[in-house]
Image (tube, rainbow, N blue to C red; front, top):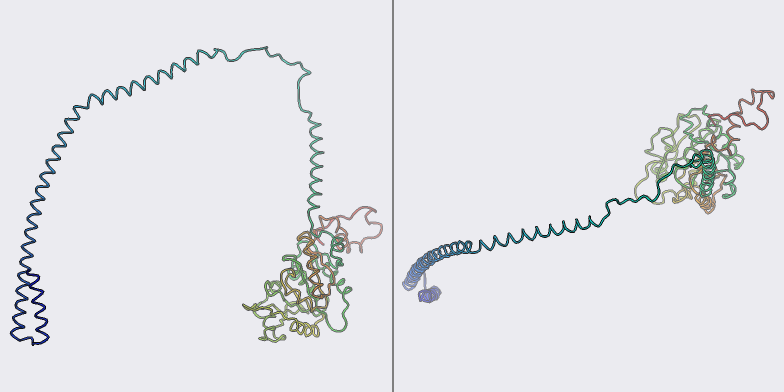
Length: 440
């Protein structure tokens, strides 16, 4: 009733405020009525709260009293039942113990019965053993076994060696190059050859590169001016960069004006042989940032000049363009007797084909017993597709001291100086090979 009266009075006050002012007697009366009704409503609510709280406390007290009474009844009932069921629990426990004893006794009886059925002596002697006669002893034939082992070991070893040699499809001899590639061998380079600039001008390996230079001249006879050559290989690590540098070094030693151009833009190594900077070079010339005259550097080796590869800019595709490369080669041939381009491996990289197509001659480097013959055959086919002039093959990394096929090269170069000093009376007998040396 108070809530309803309060709502009606507030509505009348709202209507009065729309028509009358704040200080009008009717508005004041209605406001006083609203305040009075709110006070009465709050008093009534407080009375209700107190009444409900009193009822709650009475009910809680009754609940606690009943709960205590129930707990007391439960304890009493448990105590009475424990005395009643105690004999049953004891009897049940004794029954379980007796059953376990009975099972153990039955197992023991069964075990004793099995023992009674088994005979006391399980071993029965059929006939006594006799000592064999002296002639009946058996022993291995040591000599026969050794002979069989040697024969079988040699046979299996030789068969395995021939089988491995049969599976090895790499290039091993000059005949393999001429048979499968159809190209002449213009040079045979021994094993473990380093840079001649590092080994010195009197290096024993220099003679192999002098022979390569002579054969190269016979294979390619240029007219007026110099000649541009490219040294390529089918795969990575066949020694093309070292071969090209040592060939250029030998040509410079013989008085030729030589220019080395490192056109392997992805993995340049020529600057490491000369211990020079590779910051600027061929890439700057191709991009027009530098002239060819400014990019070519003089080296500490007489008659030898060097054009580094330079840093390859990022996102630069097709920087090696045929026309620009041809102009560089023509300019260099007018000023140098030999221009050597170190190109990347031709298999998998298009730069080598572009470079080879603009050269006067191309040398294909094949490493001894490294890649299958198909790799070299594919390299030759790619050079032919690029219309390159292949002068021949350089067989690299030959182990002359172990391979009898190349014994002639080894004995010829090591014994050439000695043969000039020896007379015909002191030469080795016919049919006998000269003693092997440690240098090529």
